Amino acid sequence: MFDIPKTMRASVYRGPGDLRTETLPVPRTGAGELLVRVSACGVCPTDIKKIQYGTVPPPRVFGHETAGTVVRVGSRVRGFSVGARVALHHHIPCLDCHYCRHRAFAQCKTYKRTGITAGFEPAGGGFAEYVRVMPFVLPGVVKIPARNSFEEGAMLEPVNTVLKAVRRLNLLPGDVVLVAGQGPIGLMFTRLLQIQGVRVIATDLLSARLKLARRFGARWTHLAPGDGLPSLVSKATREIGLDAAIIAVPSDAVALEAQGLLRGGGQLMLFAHTKRGDAFTLDPASVCVDEKDLLGSYSADFTLQREVARLVFSRRLDVRPLITHRFALEKTAAAVRLAARPTEDALKILVTPKTGEAGRAKAAMRAG
Image (cartoon, rainbow, N blue to C red; front, side, top):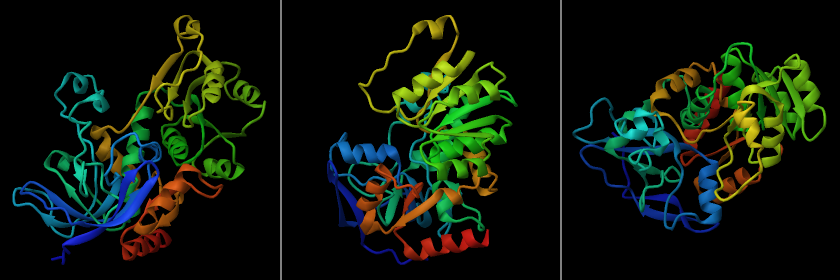
């Protein structure tokens, strides 16, 4: 049994760029719900955008890449017990609507509902000490094996989004794919593609990230900016051109250059262009005559959750080297600022409300 307090700390969004550590009631839970004590929550670019630009009204508690311990189980909940270590999934599709039948899960009305909250309008809630997990997202809750850390559990959601995008590409073993940007998302792409037998050209502005990209399986690397990428692509593909290019940075120039390096019938995947209203000029004949596909991918695919868990918890995709910074709950605003403008040594940034659990995670990493 856990001694559950009546109040908790939370980092509350009060307006654009305004995060405040406040005391809130611990969420009440119903018969079909769980109460989870948060141990780790990743800082995601989608939350950064909402916080910095005020795209949603306050107040809210953000944070959706969440892992922790079940401390209360509703009477109608089956399959979970108090003390279970779990990773959470805040969006679950209905699996029955027109969008879901076409596997466009992120467009499903049910999927767009957020099923985890620490109070106020549900917004993930991971930047708090406790979260309420609603009935319709319980199918997305994953148990964390004993050997794995909460931090690894918190990485399931971003890994899921990357695997979903990889599955949208028509790739064969031996294909050559450009991954532009080797931040945490780009590095996940590099490793998942390498596991699939794809040969990766990794590009980034920082040589340290390219060094890590080689550890994650990149066959070739290119330090941007520079004029050597076309010749590298030509050599790597024997002048055929790229089979696909994944743009994991919000750069129109990078996307256009990559599109020009695709072979006929190649695919351009936009993964970081999430700001509405932007536009860039693309030769439509390259899509029509050259049959170069323009694709996008956003959010996660619930049906991949078990596969993602196997990849992460087996450490075939070892996410531990991606986690570089950990912040106490009271420092959530600083965590968001660093994630928005990362230093050269910053990759994945976590908020760890329970310092004891963060210490356990570090010990697990050393042991692994």
